[in-house]
Figure: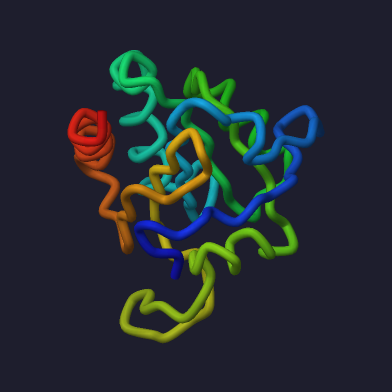
Length: 154
């Protein structure tokens, strides 16, 4: 897993329209980079809607939000539209970026060990350095934790 003080791994992933985005787009501002398992599932929807609901506070703190999951761009397009999500969702179908951030690996699901997305969030500063890590995120209240962390970092 990537830790505080480390340089954030770069990426180049497609959004819902197939446009590629990378870490370099966020130079000079904070980036809230969150990894989630799947569009339209209860936990992922709660997390995304929480970020949507506090999006103005996050932007006021000088940050952009980007979500990454293995879902295809078409799924992201439907998810964004259905819930009015005002931030980018990127597709990591090959799970390379998930792996580079330590957000893909072994986890427990209903008591069984499986390989999958480890719900986690990274706050990256305008120079590409990780300033805060939220490993194994619980969706409820996570957006408020992010706002609080951004306020402390400013």
